[in-house]
Structure formats: structure tokens, C-alpha cells
Amino acid sequence: MASISTEHPILLLAGKLANRLQECEEIRRFRLAEEQVKNSKTVQNYIETIKRKQKELVHAKHFQKTGYIRQLEQELERLNDELEHLPIVREYQQSQVDANDLLQTIQRIVADTVSTKICVETGGEDPGGCGSGGPCGCKSK
Image (tube, helix red, strand yellow):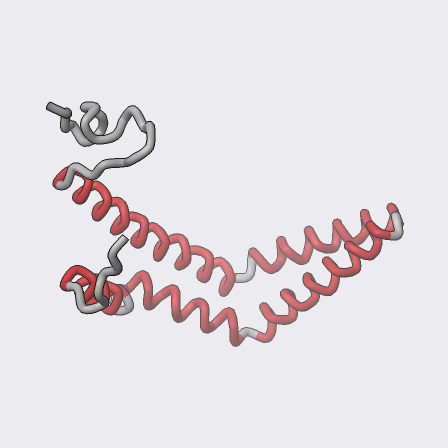
């Protein structure tokens, strides 16, 4: 397989698209929320406590301390619930969903546009590949 030069026009356009995406509201909102979560002492304290309790849980399971295991599992459930209900974490999670939706939509549009404009062989024994009259609609002669 031949390598494609990083100066290929399509790759240059992809780089420009990536730069433009950084300017989108969804991506900016995600970056801001990510930074706020990273800098929040409250969130970081929850994360550290959860990690510590998870390690304790692993040890408790190793030594088969069933009562302590139940207690740790309940504490972890409570800590995770409290963490997920912090407004800053909820904003981060929502901004992550919004940014991901945008990126998936872009990916789907590119994939759909390419597959409808260019008949690409799938290789292997895929009965729905090009030449079979499958999803791309072309047929072998």
C-alpha cells in the first residue's frame, strides 16, 4: 500500500477542518468544561477518594472480607452518585455528549458522501460489496 503524502490536498483540507472544529461552540464548551473539572478541588477530591476506595475494594475481595466489601461497594455507589450530580460534572458530561454528536455527524456525512459517490471494493467475501448490487448500488458487468 502506497503511503499518502502529508501534503496531499485532502489531508490539508482535513487539517483545516480540524482547526475549524476547535472554533465550534460545542468543542469550545467541552474544552472549557474539561478545564473546569480538572481544576476543581471538589471534583479531584471525589476522584481521589473513589480511586482509594476502589483499591481497598480489590484488597477486600482478595481477602474475602464480605462485610467490608458490601460497605465499600455502598460507599463507592454513593461517591459516584454524588460526583455525577455535581453541576460542574453534569455540564462536562453534557458538553462531551454534544461534542461527540457533532463529530459523529461529521463522520457519518463524510462516510455517506464518499460511499454514494465512489464505489469502493470491500475485499474478502462480503456479499454486499461492490459488484454485487449491494449498498452502493453498482453491479459487475
